[in-house]
Length: 387
Image 1 (tube, rainbow, N blue to C red):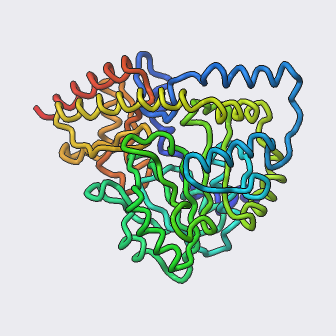
Image 2 (tube, rainbow, N blue to C red):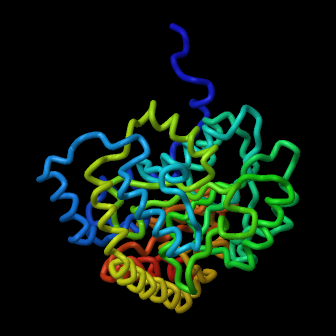
């Protein structure tokens, strides 16, 4: 029998996050700080709108690009929060989560051999999606001493005549790093000068703790060369509703939408009606969740300091990325022993790129009780290593 598997797919490694949580699922009394999922319920008024749409029999397909009402609300949101104007009918469409949007963008834009600059550590899906779109990932290793920000010199050193796209994964998963307006200005100037497009993944844009998020698309000359990807999973605690959105130049949106038409048809109708309510009346919900995440963030940073665990201060998302280099173990070895001895699951930094070696990703999208119990276990483990 001939090999049934694509030579492009078979070399791709499974997600490094899943290994530990397959084990955790079979362990009694284990604590997990590994999943990037809000512990909040979707706010009731948002759920209620989804329920109401079902009661009214609104279970039909929407247009391929999504509900008109939702696209209008997204356009309003982008102007209100990012000072960006988009035509709802031509420059915005709705996807099945932000993950579909990433895949569509790369497939619509890349020809074989085109290079995509990918800062790491970063979300696990970017690199496989580049490969599946016949692109070539060019890894830029973000550094702890730079607070895991992308620097102009790093970008310039990575650019070749085949460079087409730069992925901007900020606020960042797994590090929690952000890029300020001043940071983005330098990157934007290079992109304009070198004629590079940007995929800006802003799924954590509402979860920043040192001022409002700034989109690189708002920099001079950047809106026409930036695809902004966002969604409802993190900011509105709507992970299971599977809803994202894309804003960008019409010429790119049209090609992304074409793939979406044939592969997906449209995003879930019930979710879209709920999302209209989220954008219209959900700002206070976002603020409450953001304040609670910030409280948890401060708790973790104080606990790390008291136990002598080095960690740069993150100002976005809901992750911390402490260093465990001083213990002389690999990230995988540390995480495995922590799970075996303390029944505490965290994610090795290497799940997010080779340069994540020596770090762990810990999510604080968990209750304070869970965090206290987990940090007690981590402290016990670390104290045992110091003896």
